[in-house]
Amino acid sequence: MVSKVIISIDGTSSTGKSTIARRIAKKLNFTYIDSGSMYRAVTYFCLKNGIIFNNKIEKKKLSENLEKILIDFKLNPINSQNEISLNNNFIDSKLRSLEIAEHVSKIAKQKNVRNFILKIQHHYSKKNNIVMDGRDIGTVVFPNAKYKFFLTASSKTRAKRRYHEMKKNGLNISFSDVLENIITRDKDDSTRTNSPLKIPDDALTINTEKLSLDELEKIILDHIKNN
Ligand code: DC
Image 1: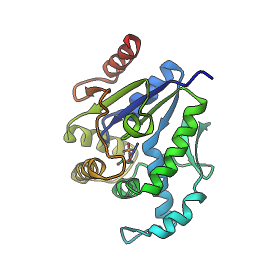
Image 2: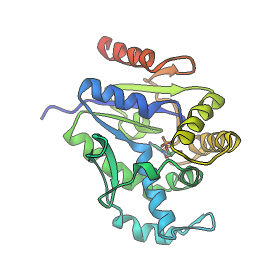
Image 3: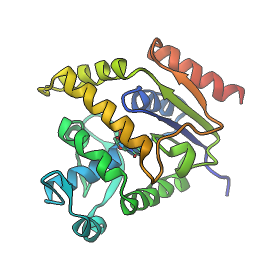
Image 4: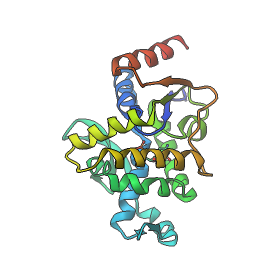
């Protein structure tokens, strides 16, 4: 069997990973997998089912319930995009709230949650050429990915992007809350014991601060073409 091609795009939150990963997948006719949405979906499930209670995770309840979580990626007929579904419901639009953002790092550092998600990530790579974005894709999930990218930008620029996106989606939030959440999540994601955010040794690091999406896309596609 010819092995599938994996493109990993890691980086801190709101560096434009998902947007560019989706574009690159479309250009190359690969499947796009948003790994952050998996951690957000588990967080959503935990909030809905009392597994996160008073800002704390009920760890026993979490491990008892993990097998009740069915995460899949399929075509959403409403917007024709490959999107996450949780127990057969498309929920992507519910995953972008500040409430989810405030709890997701706690969930993402649980070893059993990471192992659970790792299995799903590996399952997809068996069937398809994929572009996957996240924090640990090039380091832990697919250390042998053929092409690896790591995106960066200042926390202020990233907060501005996330703030405008949330406003556009009708969420009532303040810029300072978004900025604070980004700084806290950067710290939590890069200092956790399990699969911390770090730059893969063999990744191309790109600062997206002053790049348009077209410019970023060109850098990534040129790198793929030349390597
Ligand atoms: O990319 P995002 O903001 O949607 O990710 C949400 C959270 O999920 C992020 O704060 C950390 C976690 N995450 C992770 O730990 N590992 C990944 N591969 C992707 C996301």
